[in-house]
Length: 221
Image (cartoon, rainbow, N blue to C red; front, side, top):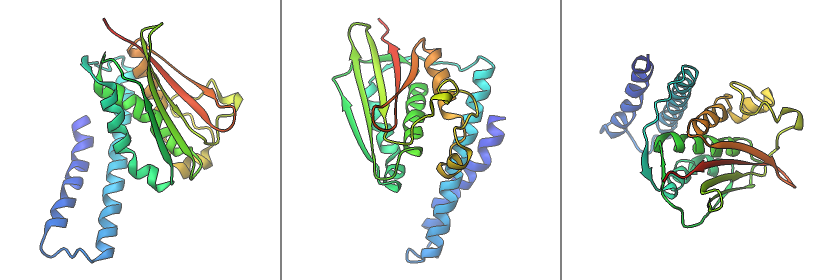
């Protein structure tokens, strides 16, 4: 099923650079450039949704299939920063990263990156245009754990919805979510990835605007 879902999109994505490299393609043809950009963006979005649905299927079958390795948390935070640049620019958001000198983490690198990426992406979607997002990561020596957090200045979460935020397919406000492009999958997946690592995930309301999401991952000896 995974192969059948991904292959058509891979072919579509692969055709885009081929078209762009053809001698007949005119770089000053703004309409062609715009259409190819729309195709690429929507193919990427659809691929992301398919990957998320496959992750949900694995979670529900209790088969996330973690592959542990030792890696630098700073590295994946820098990768997330790079991969979210376009979304940040589109909403004129300032991203600030605060990191101590971090110890290596023994975990499933790709899964942890996905969990953290989903949290950052959620904050971007629901942040007010022109506001700021703060990513922090530090070593809690008392608990010997890595604390990762994302603070936004968005619309926040209604108190009555606090116990639903990590529920599959749950969306706080359907009209706003459609505008922001939410699917109700990202935080559910993030929670299950962190829990599979025997970690914790939670959020707190900021004193002014928005919320801060946290994950705690205990370091392996």
